[in-house]
Amino acid sequence: AKEKVEPLLAKLRRMGFEPDEVTYSLLLSCAAMSADMMTAERWVQVAEEEGVSLTMYLFNKLIQCAAIRSDVSAAERWFRRATARGLEPDEMSYRQLLDACIKMNDVDAADRWWRHAVENRLADELSRTATRE
Image (cartoon, rainbow, N blue to C red; front, side, top):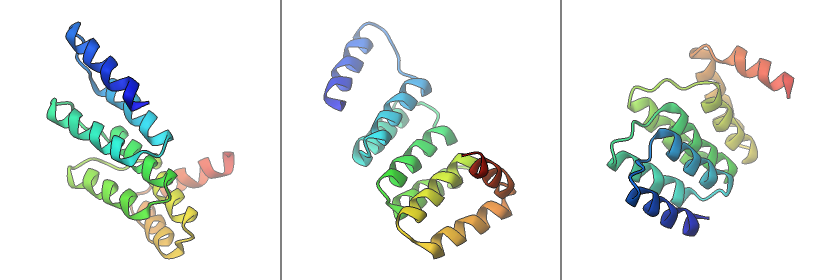
């Protein structure tokens, strides 16, 4: 997919199109769904170099990619990078983190992140959405 996207993005740039947060959100979603962490991280780097504001939504896509790969440490790393920038984690941030922990049967990490969600007053929302699914 990235082999097709990069030339298309270059062509759009030559036509005067400037990628924005929505563009990078779509690119990150594609990388996340294919569990391609290297590509996802590359898109974030490119977005940052181009001055695109990295929002929690974009970081959630990185956390999602890590969760799909069952990579707890990468999910935690991107979560921490987002919060180090002053971004507020949301329900999706914790949901993706917990998903990675569950896939790896890492009960200790899941418990630690659940407690973190409780401290940030997001546990009720996580519980409500879990019962709807």
